[in-house]
Length: 217
Image 1 (cartoon, rainbow, N blue to C red):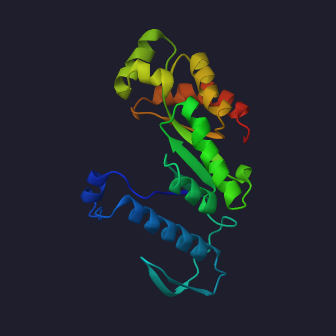
Image 2: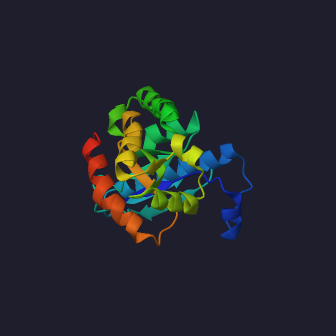
Image 3: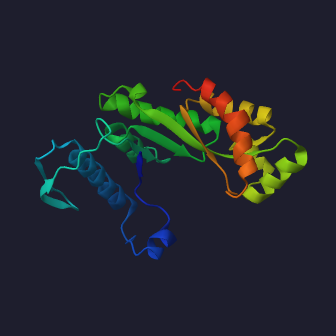
């Protein structure tokens, strides 16, 4: 199991679930920082012991430890594109940093900011997993590729710069750009989850090749 946490960005989603979104971005990041601190402290408090916290947003008094079977704790994923606060939170708390919807040419800089933040706090930048999510439309023929591209809602032009589309061989070559930019892990974004043939094609012909290229297999 892995846990991904963010500061929140999509106000309609907050309204739908009754979660307050009235704070400034800075306040949301302050809240997230305190959340990350509390979660890690609860997970790493020794079994049988108690944990207390007094912060700007949260008060915990003699809370029981919540140790996990994963050592030292469940991996935390922090992601985003912010130039300052996001890298700082990832360097301080995360096991994985995820950059969403970034073309390879920009990914180098996004990962670079996180690496610099790690060095600033005295952490080995290579102790983090660097990942990104990529829209993929793969097919064994032109008609199949075009159908999946249309269902994704993405234009061919956009997929050419921030995505991957084509035959398995072409998709593998395009995804390699993200690994060359520093990604250790790729999340393939599929918009038609009922298209199981697409999943099978990626699993059989694309995933093994990409896994073999990754520096962290």
